[in-house]
Length: 171
Image 1 (spheres, rainbow, N blue to C red):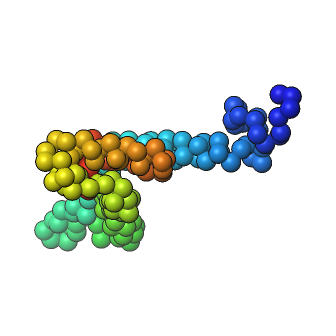
Image 2 (tube, rainbow, N blue to C red):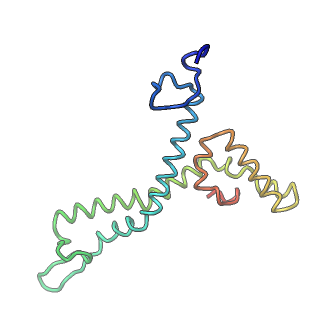
Image 3 (tube, rainbow, N blue to C red):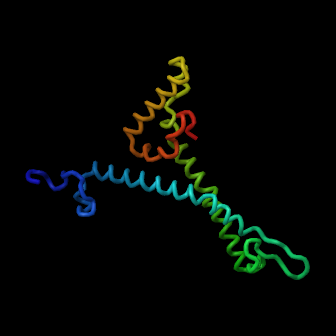
């Protein structure tokens, strides 16, 4: 477009523009959109796979001991000897994955919310006392939280974790 500087064109087609040509404002909007999409997809994926993966990790420890010199075998697959070195490795791996998946993901979500708790609950209890009504206080806190999300897109990227809850229930 005539008369426009190289870096000031609107962000239209990311694939056709080199990174240096993308204006900073549009790049930040693009990066927040990518973050929102990544968090949304990772949350949906982890939520749908969470129960089955957690259970699969725990099955690695479910061995059945047989009398005599038969040893112990995995309950879900009797062809796997629980006393083997290979199974010991997979038990250690499953233990690590329990820390990563069933413990780590909820912990990560809590830490993300905890770091932003002042913005997630901008004072619902205070607004309730000031306005004399719990509903009015909640509505004011929600309006304040929406204002903060517009000012900070990184807060909006966490909406999938707190959007359905009252501001005072950020956790």
